[in-house]
Structure formats: structure tokens, C-alpha cells
Length: 132
Image (cartoon, rainbow, N blue to C red):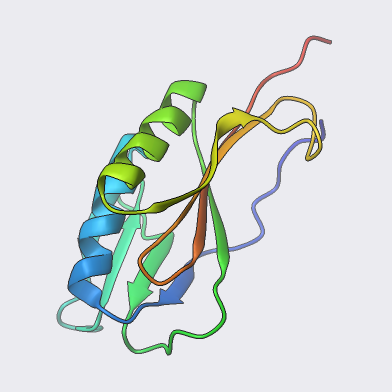
């Protein structure tokens, strides 16, 4: 598999209910090592999440909820993918693909999919190192 290159700095997704979506994403992103960051003074209708010190992903009521989007969060292990999926279901998500290998996407692809409160397809994915 080629070396992965990150091409996005951050993404913001429109949500209909900030408090509901905040609770959902806090629950599902904690297993991936993401923490919540608020922008209360600058962006009072938004909440960011990311690894410590980074706000890679945000939700906001400043953006309309339109067509659902697909967001895939990187996981460091299969166990993190499994924990993400369990946390999402416990937080009220609808299952959209249980944890498992997805060889149709690429060799070593292990992911899980859920639908958030607004119908966005949210994924956690781990790319396993393949033997040389």
C-alpha cells in the first residue's frame, strides 16, 4: 500500500442539534484518542475534535444539514475501530457496517461504519501493515 498523504487540514460538518451531536461525537471519538475543543469566543455554534492540540474535525449549526457526508477517522488498531463502533451504537448511532476487513477497498483495510444523528456516514479505519 502506498504511503498515505493527508490532503485536508480540517473538516466541518453541519449538524441540526449541536448539543446532541456534541455528545455523540464525544462518545465515538474518545476511543480514537480525540478530545473536544470548543471555539466559544470565535465560533459559538461550533465544537471541534482532534488529537491533543489539533482541531481536525468540527461540527457546527452555522452550516446547513444537507446531503449526508462520509467522514473516515484514522484508528491506530483494530481494537480502536471496535471500541469506536461499540461507543457509537451505545450513543444512539445506527449501524452501517460492523467492524471487519474490507478487502474490496484495499488489502489490510479494517473499518466500521455508523450513521450519526443527522444521517452522516461516520467510519473508523485501521490500515494494517502488510508483510513485505
